[in-house]
Length: 204
Length: 204
Length: 204
Image 1 (cartoon, chains in turn yellow, cyan, orange):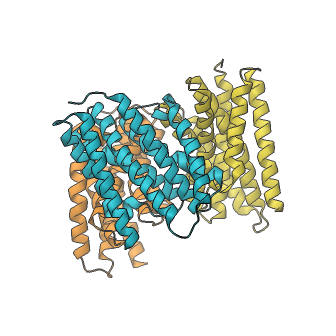
Image 2 (cartoon, chains in turn blue, purple, orange):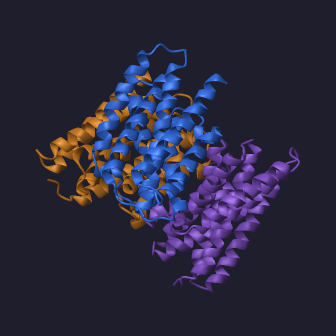
Image 3 (cartoon, helix red, strand yellow):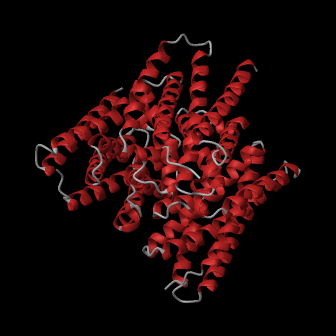
């Protein structure tokens, strides 16, 4: 049912790692952490979801131990995002919007990567959707807990729901269409849905 | 020393999963979460203790990945408990008592299941008692942390203690009597002890 | 590159376990926990860092399950430290200083043990330094979160930094000099650096 397509999944995971590292470093800047603290939170958020996924599935050593790429991406991206965020004029919500938009990309990408990894390990499709949701939401949850903010996944209906629905549609689609098509379609769906929710919250 | 008796342990784990899911969903209702948030907390609390146990023991993929039953029980039970709890007249402590009684059943059952699983993996009996206590208390701890309540295990002497003593008596009994007898005896002892503590707290 | 030297690492881990158990029990006493709660926090802090390290590396069952020594050390040491701490005259900062000094010893020892274990599993040296930092800081983080205190690792620049630099120097030194020399040198460097930071903080 599913072909490895591992280079695409690898590329998406690296991209998701970068956006979550940036999102968490921006959150750190908003909470007046220094460069070091913001980088720690950036890395923890970037690899947290995949780490929990790997532990639950028994894929150990976890992914960032066996492949240095993820840490090598997360650390400089978090530091760079911190620099940019601390130089943005504050008080007009720009940093918050940027943070939420990066988070939306990370949520969508990590969800699909998590589903993909779970399916490759031949879990039940329903379990794969749950693993995708964990992979997609845990990084942001770690970021928010470390910054002492209530995690979006508990506060907002349309956070975990978008992850679960997106993962579910992906599981359905890959048995019908080419896997790359399924990936792109579901990514676009989830991102649009989440950005729409964010835009409405900003207006609200 | 110990026979698998795996169908009994399986049945008890399913039962414990259901009561912890209900207890956590009721906690969610008390903290004015919506249906979705209460269900997420219900599932996390129901499978959290066993997940940590499996990770520490190296039993991976963790139990709810290899057997769908647990999620299939926890999700509808949490949702149903939320519906009932939100319809109970509030303000008279009924939901809190119900939550604590379900929690007491979960504490006792998960403790015994955790000890049993650890012994089957041939850990030292002392370690088995610790693993039982972790299995019994972590679900409620996750529930309380997500609802921003101080976990009972840190607040109350007679929470973890009941789990440790019950697990210890169980480890001793199974070398003396039939395993089913040991299970029932220890479950009854722990439940009575915990319900007694709860009743005294309500009066206090 | 690295010889097992496992009896030295074992001895250092037991020592680090004892000081972290003491440090966390003293923290518990400062937060007016009772003996039981302080012991639970002492044990969790003492084995927490190594447990996360083992999970990430896939060394399961985790170390305190396969070797009873660690629990047998952590439990009485935590209880004894609680007794001493509750009998120290309070209000003059003696307990806080004692807690921070034990924590400094634990930070240095656990970091080096974590690096050592990671290198023995042939991770990349850079990853070994990260694993060392996790092993060194997670125990204190668990202690602080359970006592509802902001973890030092997020609050202070010179906490995780000392762990990372000490681990990095250790990775460099062991390819140049005898491993025991590298261990002692790095331990002394980290401890002196951390005690210096603590002394400056006390002077305020």
